[in-house]
Structures are given as structure tokens and as C-alpha cells.
Amino acid sequence: MVELDDFMSISNFNDCRKEIIERKKLGRVLEAGRNAPSPGNIQAVEFVVVEDEEKRHHLSEILGDPRISEAPSSIVLVSDMERMRRRVSDELGACYAESAAAAQNMRLLASKEGLSSNLVTGFDSDDVAGLLKCPEGKVPLAVVSFAYCDSPVSSSDRFGMNEVCFYNEYGSQVSSVFDGFEWKGIREEKEVYNKKVKGAISWIRKYL
Image 1 (cartoon, rainbow, N blue to C red):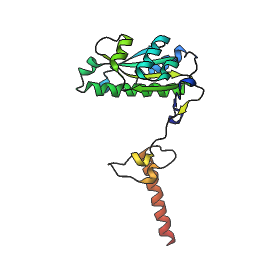
Image 2: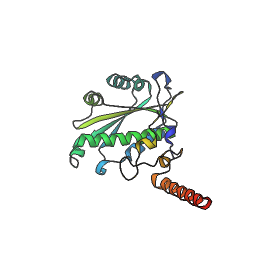
Image 3: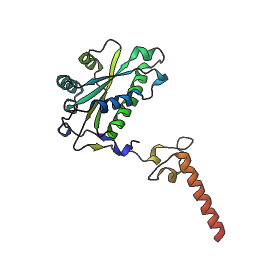
Image 4: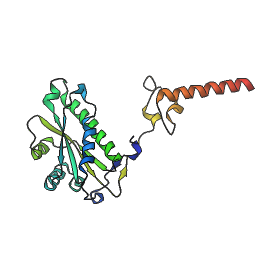
């Protein structure tokens, strides 16, 4: 099981080791991406592994991120827009959603394998498509780079559960349900909370 606290990012380009990532390990990362959720199970995402030094340098320039040039392996997530369009009206939004799920799957698995990673989106897809010789209709939407790093950065702080999660309807909160150090689920925590409240009431009635 991958713990979210173990999620590791590439801090800077000087931090990447030149060590080649093992084929089997990179294969497991790709398999995690391939098995990510897909809208309507259309499976429109495809993967281009970029390890050629010159191509990594050009990709780094297009994306404006030097870490891509220094990391030994990058995976470009390419979406088949035509395949998605057959089933979904907003094919671009659906492809972005599928790419995001695949990228997250790969990064979590990579952390478990001792790899740091870096995600880049929002770039010029046409330039990347030209670099990779993608056919028409195949659109690069995300790039994930992988490397062994000496000083990986842990995942950034998030809003507290009590700030972003509600019960049954928006705005409905029971603070103690969400503020526990280990949050195991709303339903289970609420049951524990209700039992504690009932116990406290019984104790008060007994001694008052």
C-alpha cells in the first residue's frame, strides 16, 4: 500500500541522479498508469517513454522545466481525442481527467518503488506532438518525469479534512469527525463519535 505521505517530488535538476531506471520498475509504473480510471472505460490515454538525451533536452525547453532534461526517464501521456469523442461530448475535459488519473497512479507507484517524479501540464501540445511525431488526433496532455533523487521533496501540506469535507450535504460538519490524526472514513468516524456522545450523556445522567 502506498502512503500519501511518502509521495516524493523532484526538487531541482541538480538533485537527479543519472542512474537509469530499471526496465521492470518502469514497466510497473506504466502498468499503474494503464490501469487508471477512464471515462466510460474508453482508455484513450497512450504513453510515450522519452529517454533519448537530445529529445529530453528539447522536451525540457518546450515545457520550460530543466528537471525534465536531467531526469533519465519521462513519460508523455498522449490522448486519442477521436476515440474519446465517439463517446463523450467534452472530449478534451475527459482526456485531461483520464491523463490526470493515470499520472497520479504512476507517481504513487513510483514513490513506492523509491523514485521521485515531476508532473507538468498546460504546455503547447502541438510542439510536443511534433517532437514525438504524434499522428493527427493524438494530443500530448501531461509529462511525468522520473528519477532517483538524493533530496526528494515530500508532498505539500493540504487543507485539513475539516476544511474540505462535509457529511451528507455541503457545509454540514462535525469537527471531531474530521480532525482525527488518522481519518478512516466519514461513516466509521461518525459512528465512533456518536458512541462517545451517548457514553458521555449516560455518564452525566448517572452522576447528576
